[in-house]
Length: 373
Image (tube, rainbow, N blue to C red; front, side, top):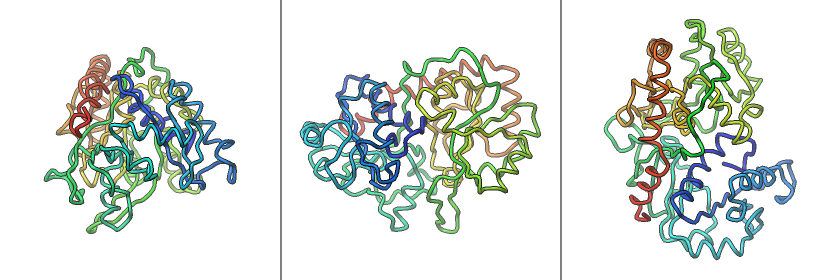
C-alpha cells in the first residue's frame, strides 16, 4: 500500500497511521511491505532502482522509519531497506504482526511470530472473495480484525466465513493531523478511484465500486450552490461517465497531482471545506459498517464529513460534524446545516476524531483484544 503502487498519498497514510501510532505508544515497529515483480516500475527494473523503492524510501525517511522498514520482493530475499537476514532476526523477536489483508506471505518471517492478526481494511470484499473460492490469505493467522464495524451483526449481509472478527476503526495519529486553520478550496471534496477492483455478485446482489454509488447522485451539484471537487482517478475511456460528471458540474482533478504524496494528501484534505464521502457500493449494499480512513482524517482536521451510509451510524455519532446519507435529500439537508452552523460542525468533527479515532485509543484497544496489549 506504500511502495507497491507508489504515488498514492491516501493509501500511504492508511499504513502510516498504524506505524506512527504504534511507535507513539512506545512499541518498536518494523514495517515490511511485500511487492510482486510485476508491480515494479518501470517494467523490468530491479527493485533497488525502481520507482517503487524510491517512493518507499522517501516516505520512510520522512517519517523516521528508514532504519526499520523494508520493501520485499515476493518469492525472494531481495529488499530495499532492511536486509532480509535482519528481517528474519527481527521477526523472531516480534510479539505480534498486523498483516494488512494478509499481504505479507513470506512464511519464514510469519511462522516466528506468535500473534498474527489478519487486518481487514476492505470489509465485505475480502469475505465475499473468500466465499467465492478466491484465496484472500485468511489461513495462517491467529486473530482476525476488521474495520467493518457491523460484521457479525443481524443487519449486515457480509459472511463471517466462520471466523471470529474483532472490530476496530481506522486510527488517526492526531499529532500528525492537527486541526486545520484555513480553507483553501471552498468545496466539498474527496479522494478515490472511480473503479477499484473486484466487484462481485453474491446471492443475487452486486457489490460494486464508487462508480456505481456516485451515479445515483450525479445531479447533486446542480441542486446546490456548493462546489464539488473530486480528486478521482477515472480512466479517460470511461467516456460516458466523464461526460456526465462534467455536464452535472463535478470538478475532477488528477489525484496523482494533488494527493500523490503524504504531504500533498494532507494539504488537500485540510484545505477543503468538508468531505462528500462516496463509498464503494459493496460497502453500502453489505451494511458492513466500513468507515473511511480518509474521512477520519477530514474529521481530525476539523472538516465536517457527509458520508454515504454503510451501516456505520449505529457505531459513530452523527448529526454534528458527521452526517450519514442514503438519499440525495439527506445530502442537501446536511449541506444546508453546514452553511448555517459551520463552526459548530467543525468543532464537532474534531471532537469525534478525538473520541473515536485517536490512534492512542484505537490501537491500544486493538492490541488488547488480540492479546498483545
